[in-house]
Length: 251
Image 1: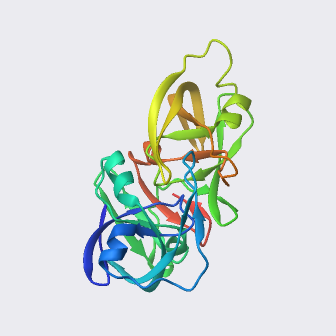
Image 2: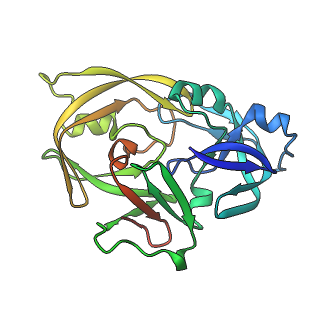
């Protein structure tokens, strides 16, 4: 979690590269009397939750090293989600902010900072992983066992290592007869949902090969524009990473 402020009021924020837009807790937005924008209502989806119709508000966002005046953010019920995740936050910082900066996150030391692109210098021993852009979302190819590579969303807001949609997991052979399937909980913008968990003998991303990796399987909400998979903090937590949307690569 990151210390931040909304119109000068201290809050806690998390960086969610899986979110198309930033979002602020609805109750907090009401307490701060944040002005609504004139834009039409928006429909927000979690990966496996139900859709939520909401509005957007504007406020001045500040985090160490970054100020975003007049940020437009969706007003969502984040308090229930933060409680279910066991994390205290009132703001999701999404791709609308990340596309203007380089995110550098040191997960082992629980540190993060935002850098201007011209000041960012990757470590000499960094592993560069090119990303693809689909609808503005950062995607990376992942290979599960011997299945063909699959493009998944780089999602710093996902708690697991890798999550696949039911169709993608079936295509990768993870739901074949004889596989041990366990239950697991996950948190999405739609709330708490029950998913299945299977173990893959190998998962390859970039130059990394992970053995005996737990893969979550989710069923997307009906009509939700959900990706085929999510690559999350379960992988990133052991590394210091940088996400550069301008060059579409991570390291």
